[in-house]
Image (cartoon, rainbow, N blue to C red; front, side, top):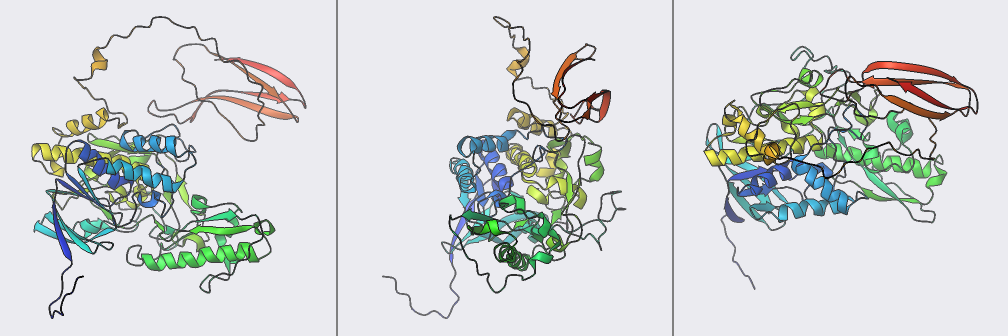
Length: 547
């Protein structure tokens, strides 16, 4: 039994001081990758996550696809792959979780962190205060765990803010931006019209449905909207859509996406339950009779809030022109993807995208605060304009860059440096080499590794096989839209291609041989040659072309 008498003094919660080499705030994919990378090289890491699971927007709480440069295999960079630690995580998830169950992905992430003995993981623990050692350095971060009523005071020489909203960077006084710049500030033609299109990207909330096998009635809560059929976006809804296919259920770009986040979430609840009322009770979806709501998100997926200023700010031209910098440590390839601020209520298209011709590199100078000497930045809060952020914000790009933060923290500890010191031309090569050795690709960067045994290796084949091609498959495909096959070809050689076609209707078939205007990407933007063939109905032909 515990019996404690009345006290006129304020009681203080149990407080535990913690000491480490690096404190990472935020347990999304970025925070996880930064923490694991540093821990594997011997740093003692404290990982503070204010949610009960890891993964952030990729977790079972939000259930957003984790995507990067490949962009659903649907853009010019469909053959890109981030590599490094995030690739290791995705391959493990693919091995165990081919169905994409978000609950299983939670366990994959938790296991990766749990197995690192140098990581102290604190879930359900929200940072609410920082103490500065002087004007330009953080000394401690104070956090509270709601589940064990314990306060933690984390002390370290280095901090990484991967919290999404930049909670410790903000409290420490780091300079930041929130919202869209004008076209003139960085000469960005893609910058939005602020009054019409809006200033910020909003939050999205997802839901899942389930077929029960018998008719299910639905009574909406009183707060559900009653006019879902009037939503401009309702035309996007297809019965059976669930999860990330509902990304267009978005709201909040006209509001403060930090301090009004709960208001935004409640408005999205109104919309989601109103949409489902429309589906179940309008009579326009009779095939939904046996469907019920299985899951509705309680945490919206947040796209945008603060972006903190580093010694370099990524902008539109860095992406479009694929500018390379001496301190490149990561890359992106997602489209510059902006959304109208009014979200589901907007008259504009759900998003406006510009796809680059190839991947772009991200300088290391984007990954630390220019004001707070011992503060790294990771995730969507890195130093970028609003337009460039439209591309760099996606999770695999964020996680890829966070590995660079983890490696940089290791070098800081080894050599007694601060984040900015590694940006020097004398130091950056060590970071780039460490990343490369751990499987992280940095586009168009040539590195000399004197310890690479492959350079001195002599490889011989015991026998060879002359490849004569694949046998034709009896698997005819209806050509409903243009299709292509990418093949590697040597220069200054003649090639022969054979195509067999069977025309269901009289038509004109056009064949094109295309290449890229740049050797650094695979964007097929140059037509080398083309042929047109008139086909009669039910005519089967073999066509041979030499190039």
